[in-house]
Length: 173
Image 1 (cartoon, rainbow, N blue to C red):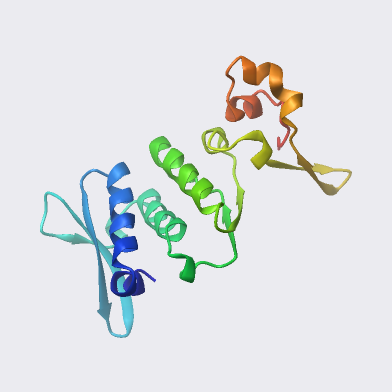
Image 2 (tube, rainbow, N blue to C red; image 1 turned 60 degrees about the horizontal axis):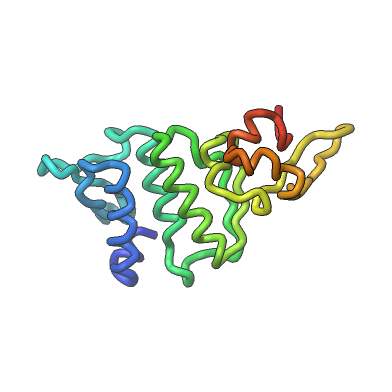
């Protein structure tokens, strides 16, 4: 996918690298290499001529590379529905906020469904964008949130993530 992006959509490729740099300041560039019929993703740091593969990269960084790529694909490469399970895993809090804003931006073009346990990621969304799912009587209950029910707390500047942590929104294990 990155290989295709690099050739067909260089602006998107540069945008992806720029967003990675926002969280990993020593990141210089992604390097896509074809080797024995496989595409290898490597990356270079700003202070080194070495390239680093997945085996020398943290799980969180690899996840971040993948999420930034997915959430910034050109429309022609995107499916109609994007489903992401717990994108916050292994990410620095600053990365979680950035991923939240990318999800919100992508949701203007595609349907995006995200399952999360991160109050910080929940903070990226308004109450009317959140659907709470809970187990009730051995069945999954789906509930939309009504802003009016939470107006008192919102007027006191509580965030959606704080409301969730206070168990006001539901969605507890």
